[in-house]
Image 1 (cartoon, helix red, strand yellow):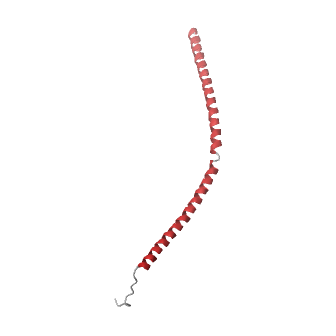
Image 2: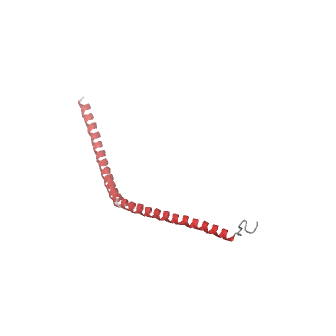
Image 3: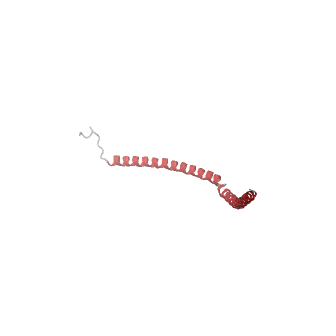
Length: 105
């Protein structure tokens, strides 16, 4: 019985030592991972932090572009109407003028 207790305690001590070594290795891996994640966070913050300002600038530029497009679109519609009016006037001016009742038709 005494020999069994000694063997059991030695086995338990070996298992605990194994777990301590594995925990130490895991701790080292986790420390490296933490350092890597911290570096990644600093880099992403450096590059992504100015984006809201750039996004606002882009949004403002897009709004100006849309307003210019709407103004050009209105001008184009006016030009189309003027073109149609010009074509109508040209057609009317080229057509023979018949005034009913004057020439006896």
